[in-house]
Length: 356
Length: 80
Image 1 (cartoon, rainbow over the protein chains, first blue to last red):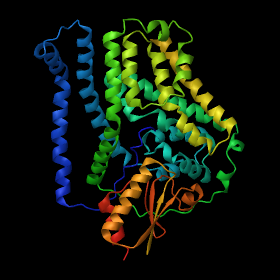
Image 2 (image 1 turned 135 degrees about the vertical axis):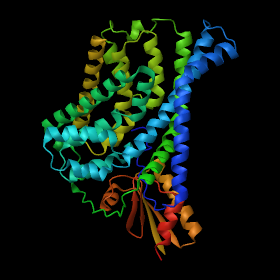
Image 3 (image 1 turned 45 degrees about the vertical axis):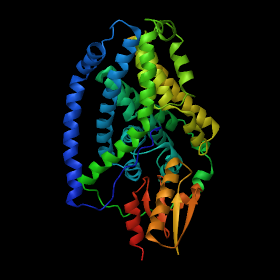
Image 4 (image 1 turned 90 degrees about the vertical axis):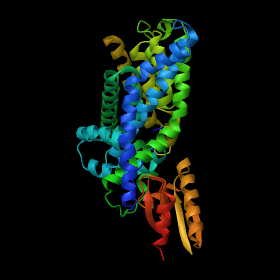
């Protein structure tokens, strides 16, 4: 939700040949160059840091520097590729289509669909209110709407890539599936609790008009352009957070003593998970900035469950989002929403501390 | 005189869209009045679910994205 680089459907009509060439050839070139760089990145970094500059491998500054030089291009490469692919995938979805798909679906199935669509539908928090009203108006149940609103920010493509790059595919998969589960179950509970009376009255009074956007189905070239736009928008926004995040991570790698974090964020500390969530909820950060730091913390003894809980609390529940939602829902529903999601995150945290 | 409306509750993207729409209109040399619509009720009246949206002469042209300068120029060009 923080990366408002969503909504990248291109409907431009220029289909001239020139444009096609621009789309495909650099794409293939960049992709192959990227793969080569990715494969040899470790060797290149080793060569650069140890051989070329000739730094001492056991030195702290060297460790921090090596971490930084290795991680920044790796993460940026992964980011560019995945954001590009996600941009293309998202061009097949729109909030209108999602709304149509969710109309008249029974509760539990609706929750599952809404959570899944929450991942792929282009959406950003600045549109949360019109979207909420739009959903309510077509009679989509409150719980289903919440499943969407929980999943959309929680399962974030930037977070997914970073977890994949820094921790491996297992952790990325765990993050996506538990996030999805939290969204489904939280929405389902909210739906069961008959909370519609805690939606602000004015929401039901709004009569929205019929939208007849003449959108041509984009050609595949235009979808590729949508991928480019996504890369431009998202990467230009998050690269600085990634640099800062990896910079802090590099510092932790080099200077924080081994196992330092074990005493605060280790799995034997029973209160670490709720504490991580409590601290994480009001914090508002880009997924891109938080994950490199988390990786460094884990390397210093923080447990995976606690760190994941912290990360999910930071990116899944945020103060700005709550302020926006407060305009359409009343306090009791807000409290219920935040506490259900926070509990879900804590359960995930404990589960992983127990499993790993 | 054309009426250009920017629908959005005041996010960074809305300002960006306003800027581009203004530039496009100026470069096309049309007479226009630009209004920013921040009232959610009015936005919903247009049936728009994702902001920012661009409305020209009462007709929703785009929603949920920032079209390029060229695209907006094309829309304005089709008005006359």
